[in-house]
Length: 245
View 1 (tube, rainbow, N blue to C red):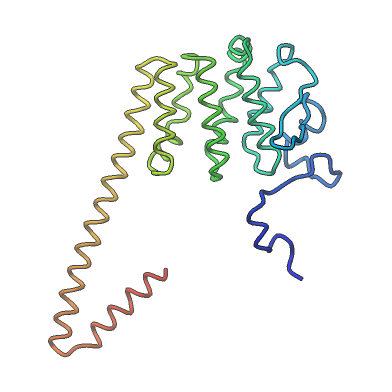
View 2: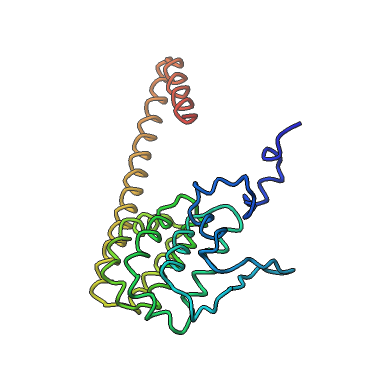
């Protein structure tokens, strides 16, 4: 009998972890360890329509250090329900009316966890981290400006992907609204220049392929006319093999 993870239905369900199973290797997940040990004072409440977090302590009375820092660390999690806990918890703390005065003192501690999440190859992790960075910018305003260079190469790389161009552009616009124009301008110029460079490279590759195709057509035409059919066939066979690679 095939293992359950090989079943087609497994692709439709996200990877799930039992939060309080004794078989969990918590050493591999500091965030899971922090949650199960109570250092993040909330519990997951399963609803009929959607889940929510219930806090054991009023958010007004929470120490953002270490709770918000731990939630930022959890942005890299991929096993359900850890991503929900980290993202929702981060959002709720950032939405508190006193968030700004609590976040600014610990801002340096949030920079690297968000950077690591943005660097993830997992699309949902990246999206969650980008959303967290937008929330952070909205709360602390231009206090984030001096850290924006930390994210330059990451955002520029995503900017070259059409899938994320709009979301990254939207984030940059929000950073501009919340921060200093000069810092944003440098960030925008960097990402746009990288995007333009990618466009030029794509155009160059297209021209190279068109030139190669023209040469190939002329070669095959000559080989066929001169009776060297085997040469034309050899070229075609080699191209087919390259296509497989």
